[in-house]
Length: 179
Image (cartoon, rainbow, N blue to C red; front, top):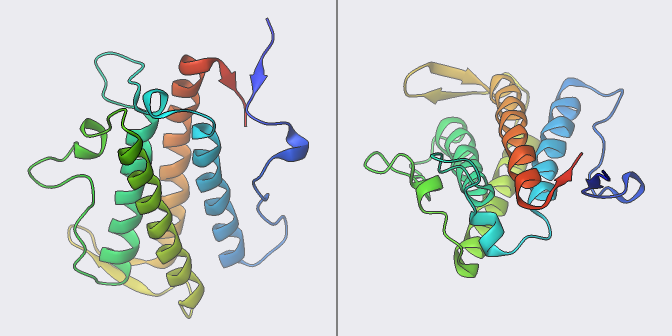
Protein backbone atom coordinates (compact mmCIF):
# COMPACT_ATOMS: atom_id res chain seq x y z
CA UNK A 1 0.00 0.00 0.00
CA UNK A 2 1.42 3.39 -0.93
CA UNK A 3 0.96 6.33 1.38
CA UNK A 4 0.08 9.67 -0.20
CA UNK A 5 1.82 12.37 1.81
CA UNK A 6 0.34 15.87 1.82
CA UNK A 7 3.45 17.39 0.40
CA UNK A 8 7.02 16.51 -0.38
CA UNK A 9 9.14 17.44 2.67
CA UNK A 10 11.36 19.53 0.40
CA UNK A 11 8.41 21.71 -0.66
CA UNK A 12 6.59 21.89 2.70
CA UNK A 13 5.24 25.48 2.90
CA UNK A 14 5.61 25.69 6.67
CA UNK A 15 8.64 27.18 8.35
CA UNK A 16 10.03 25.06 11.18
CA UNK A 17 10.02 26.75 14.58
CA UNK A 18 13.44 28.19 15.43
CA UNK A 19 15.66 25.65 17.22
CA UNK A 20 17.42 28.36 19.23
CA UNK A 21 15.47 31.49 20.00
CA UNK A 22 13.97 33.40 22.88
CA UNK A 23 10.68 32.36 24.46
CA UNK A 24 8.43 34.57 22.34
CA UNK A 25 10.02 33.56 19.04
CA UNK A 26 9.84 29.89 20.04
CA UNK A 27 6.15 30.05 21.03
CA UNK A 28 5.23 32.10 17.96
CA UNK A 29 7.17 29.70 15.73
CA UNK A 30 5.36 26.66 17.09
CA UNK A 31 1.97 28.38 16.84
CA UNK A 32 2.68 29.46 13.25
CA UNK A 33 3.67 25.88 12.40
CA UNK A 34 0.45 24.50 13.91
CA UNK A 35 -1.66 27.07 12.05
CA UNK A 36 0.14 26.13 8.84
CA UNK A 37 -0.57 22.48 9.54
CA UNK A 38 -4.32 23.15 9.64
CA UNK A 39 -4.06 24.91 6.28
CA UNK A 40 -2.02 22.06 4.87
CA UNK A 41 -4.54 19.43 6.04
CA UNK A 42 -7.30 21.33 4.24
CA UNK A 43 -5.36 22.07 1.05
CA UNK A 44 -6.57 20.81 -2.30
CA UNK A 45 -10.07 19.90 -1.12
CA UNK A 46 -13.36 21.23 -2.45
CA UNK A 47 -16.24 22.54 -0.35
CA UNK A 48 -17.88 19.13 -0.21
CA UNK A 49 -14.78 17.43 1.15
CA UNK A 50 -14.07 20.21 3.64
CA UNK A 51 -17.62 20.00 5.02
CA UNK A 52 -17.68 16.20 5.04
CA UNK A 53 -18.42 14.63 8.41
CA UNK A 54 -16.45 11.43 8.42
CA UNK A 55 -17.27 9.87 11.78
CA UNK A 56 -20.92 9.40 12.70
CA UNK A 57 -22.53 10.79 14.79
CA UNK A 58 -19.92 13.55 15.14
CA UNK A 59 -20.39 16.88 13.35
CA UNK A 60 -16.60 17.25 13.13
CA UNK A 61 -15.33 18.32 9.70
CA UNK A 62 -12.29 20.13 8.37
CA UNK A 63 -14.42 23.18 7.59
CA UNK A 64 -15.84 23.02 11.10
CA UNK A 65 -12.30 22.99 12.47
CA UNK A 66 -11.38 26.11 10.48
CA UNK A 67 -14.53 27.87 11.74
CA UNK A 68 -13.88 26.67 15.29
CA UNK A 69 -10.28 27.86 15.27
CA UNK A 70 -11.34 31.26 13.91
CA UNK A 71 -13.62 31.62 16.93
CA UNK A 72 -10.90 30.32 19.29
CA UNK A 73 -8.39 32.85 17.91
CA UNK A 74 -10.97 35.61 18.25
CA UNK A 75 -11.89 34.61 21.78
CA UNK A 76 -8.38 34.47 23.18
CA UNK A 77 -6.74 37.35 21.35
CA UNK A 78 -9.56 39.86 20.79
CA UNK A 79 -11.80 39.23 23.80
CA UNK A 80 -9.42 38.00 26.49
CA UNK A 81 -6.11 39.66 25.64
CA UNK A 82 -7.25 42.87 23.89
CA UNK A 83 -10.43 43.28 25.96
CA UNK A 84 -12.62 43.82 22.92
CA UNK A 85 -16.35 43.16 22.88
CA UNK A 86 -16.07 40.74 19.96
CA UNK A 87 -18.74 38.06 19.56
CA UNK A 88 -17.79 34.77 18.00
CA UNK A 89 -18.34 34.52 14.26
CA UNK A 90 -19.71 31.00 14.03
CA UNK A 91 -20.97 29.97 17.46
CA UNK A 92 -22.95 31.64 20.21
CA UNK A 93 -24.45 31.00 23.64
CA UNK A 94 -27.64 29.83 21.92
CA UNK A 95 -25.77 27.81 19.26
CA UNK A 96 -22.53 26.67 20.94
CA UNK A 97 -21.78 24.16 18.15
CA UNK A 98 -22.58 26.54 15.30
CA UNK A 99 -18.97 26.42 14.15
CA UNK A 100 -19.37 22.72 13.35
CA UNK A 101 -23.13 22.50 12.74
CA UNK A 102 -23.03 25.37 10.23
CA UNK A 103 -20.22 23.87 8.16
CA UNK A 104 -21.94 23.08 4.88
CA UNK A 105 -20.58 22.19 1.41
CA UNK A 106 -20.91 25.70 0.03
CA UNK A 107 -18.06 27.59 -1.66
CA UNK A 108 -19.15 30.90 -0.08
CA UNK A 109 -19.12 29.38 3.43
CA UNK A 110 -15.65 27.97 2.82
CA UNK A 111 -14.34 31.33 1.57
CA UNK A 112 -15.91 33.11 4.54
CA UNK A 113 -14.36 30.65 7.01
CA UNK A 114 -10.87 31.09 5.56
CA UNK A 115 -11.24 34.89 5.37
CA UNK A 116 -12.38 35.09 8.99
CA UNK A 117 -9.69 32.67 10.18
CA UNK A 118 -6.95 34.60 8.37
CA UNK A 119 -8.20 37.92 9.76
CA UNK A 120 -8.21 36.53 13.30
CA UNK A 121 -4.73 35.04 12.88
CA UNK A 122 -3.46 38.39 11.53
CA UNK A 123 -4.94 40.21 14.54
CA UNK A 124 -3.36 37.70 16.92
CA UNK A 125 0.03 37.98 15.24
CA UNK A 126 -0.08 41.79 15.48
CA UNK A 127 -1.16 41.64 19.12
CA UNK A 128 1.67 39.28 20.05
CA UNK A 129 4.28 41.26 18.09
CA UNK A 130 3.22 44.54 19.74
CA UNK A 131 2.95 43.17 23.30
CA UNK A 132 5.80 44.47 25.45
CA UNK A 133 6.36 41.01 26.95
CA UNK A 134 4.68 37.66 27.60
CA UNK A 135 3.53 38.74 31.05
CA UNK A 136 0.86 41.01 29.55
CA UNK A 137 -2.48 39.85 30.93
CA UNK A 138 -6.04 39.74 29.74
CA UNK A 139 -9.11 38.79 31.68
CA UNK A 140 -10.88 35.50 30.97
CA UNK A 141 -14.40 35.57 32.37
CA UNK A 142 -14.15 32.28 34.29
CA UNK A 143 -10.45 32.04 35.09
CA UNK A 144 -9.57 35.68 35.71
CA UNK A 145 -6.23 37.18 34.64
CA UNK A 146 -4.35 35.16 32.00
CA UNK A 147 -0.86 35.89 30.71
CA UNK A 148 -0.05 36.10 27.01
CA UNK A 149 2.47 33.31 27.67
CA UNK A 150 -0.35 31.02 28.88
CA UNK A 151 -2.53 31.91 25.90
CA UNK A 152 0.25 31.14 23.42
CA UNK A 153 0.97 27.77 25.01
CA UNK A 154 -2.76 27.03 25.08
CA UNK A 155 -3.12 27.94 21.40
CA UNK A 156 -0.30 25.56 20.44
CA UNK A 157 -2.10 22.85 22.41
CA UNK A 158 -5.49 23.69 20.90
CA UNK A 159 -4.18 23.54 17.33
CA UNK A 160 -2.16 20.38 18.00
CA UNK A 161 -5.23 18.60 19.37
CA UNK A 162 -7.41 19.65 16.47
CA UNK A 163 -4.69 18.93 13.91
CA UNK A 164 -4.83 15.36 15.17
CA UNK A 165 -8.53 15.39 14.32
CA UNK A 166 -7.65 16.90 10.93
CA UNK A 167 -5.19 14.06 10.29
CA UNK A 168 -7.93 11.48 10.73
CA UNK A 169 -10.53 13.45 8.77
CA UNK A 170 -8.17 14.00 5.85
CA UNK A 171 -7.11 10.36 5.76
CA UNK A 172 -10.78 9.34 5.70
CA UNK A 173 -11.51 11.76 2.83
CA UNK A 174 -8.71 10.87 0.42
CA UNK A 175 -6.16 8.69 2.17
CA UNK A 176 -3.55 11.45 2.48
CA UNK A 177 -1.43 11.16 5.61
CA UNK A 178 1.60 12.81 7.13
CA UNK A 179 2.91 16.16 8.08
